Length: 143
Image (cartoon, rainbow, N blue to C red):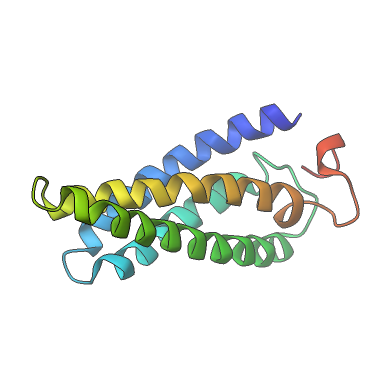
């Protein structure tokens, strides 16, 4: 059950993340890197909620409750993505800033943040966003 849910969530996340990643380049045309990461994350967030609500996690929660919990999890996930992206940018800059274009360095840093955020968000959605609190999501619950 969990592996099937993970597989479906991964597919939805690939779609949402592709839109997240691509939109960051557009947003970066008129805002700083970190703000563009945040704005792009909202694009992916909406797409993933729409795909996840009934098709992946098959929750019996109302969409309003699920969306509120999803938003809480996703916003903590946004902080994880932003923090990890900023950390990766900080870590990469001294080593590659003379050899690679800044846009490529930013892309690599953002991709790292997205990867860490994926793991956090899946677990948060499985155990909080779409789960009936008090049930065991690993045994089926609502997840």
